[in-house]
Each structure stands twice: as C-alpha cells, then as structure tokens.
Length: 250
Image (cartoon, rainbow, N blue to C red):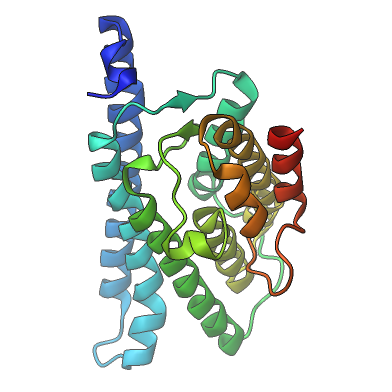
C-alpha cells in the first residue's frame, strides 16, 4: 500500500474511485464506442472490391483512434492514487477543455467547408494521422497507469517515446487533429484546432510545474528531452525545459 493510500480517508477514497477512476474510464469508453460505430459505418460504405490502400487509408486511423480511446479505460480502472495532484482550478479547466473541445465541435457539426482538398493530399493527411495515433498509443503504453487527464504525479517515465519528447501523447493528439482537419477543413473544427493547440501547450506547462515539484530527477530529464518536437543538437534549449530548471534549481 502506498503512502497516499495509507493516509486516505473513506471520503477521499470514494471520491478517487468515482472521479479518479470511474468517470474518466466511462468517458473514454464512450469515445471508444463512438469510434467503433464510426468504423462500422465506414466498412458499410466501402465498395465491394475496394483496394487495400483505400481500406487502410479509411479505416486504420479510425481503428487506431478507437484503440487510443479504449486503452485508457483499463488504465483508469486500475490506476493507483497519485503521489500528487493539482488542486488549482486553472490546470483542471485546461485539462477538461483540451480533452473535450474537439469532441464537442464534432457533435455540434463542422460548419461550412473552407476549401476542397485534393485526393492525394487527403491520403497524405490520413497517413500522417495514422502515424500520429501510433505515437500517441506508444506513449500510452509506456505511461500506463500514470496516465491522467488532470495533472498528477505518479512516477518518472523516460523510456520509449519519452526518450524523444516529454509529451508524446500531446504531440500525437495535436498532429492527428491537424491532419484530420487539413484533410477536410470546415470552419468549426479549424477554429477548434486554433484553441486546441494552445490548450495542450498550456496543459503541458501545468504538468511540468507539478512533476518538477513532485518527482526527483524530473528537472534533469526535462533538460535533456524536448517538449513536443524531437530535436537534434544541444539539449536543454527548449523554453519549457528552461522554465522547469529555473523553477526547480532556482
């Protein structure tokens, strides 16, 4: 039993079971269910003798997104009590907004189409979307039960995609969202993307502050690993890593 579990009151335990496990697991289960239905609809619309490349371009990103939504269900239902969780309102609001904004726009409708994208560019966007979801799922599989919507500190993860960037899940989400919208740009999703990207960057900053305070060794890791984009050259030059070093070392 961890120290957090040992000192937990019954009320806190119930709150964690409900809000820290059950509600997020239900949210991701609903997202996965929606993607499963979307995949079935795509299969029904495929021509009888559709070429394999078209099947891959149409279905693979949807199936990967379904996996990206389904994996957190098990992670949340089995996650331990974190070492530390943010208590401030701003990080919680940013996390919830960043998680739901694109979903809300999808439910509300896309609005007018901005431009008609050529088929070759749409196919390229589908490939980028596929690779982005692979990156995000790779991050989930390494983060495992440390995954959380609200900023929380469990353990320091530096292997897998975390050797390349500190936020591979955010990087994959941003890249996938940009690819989806670029393939068929409508006004609503385009505006949502303009808000989604800074929200994810803001979430990363909030998480950096919490992890730097709660996890020994995080400052050194942040110094050598970039935030979202892998870099070649001298480590420790990204703005996020500099902020973490100033916060911890200063």
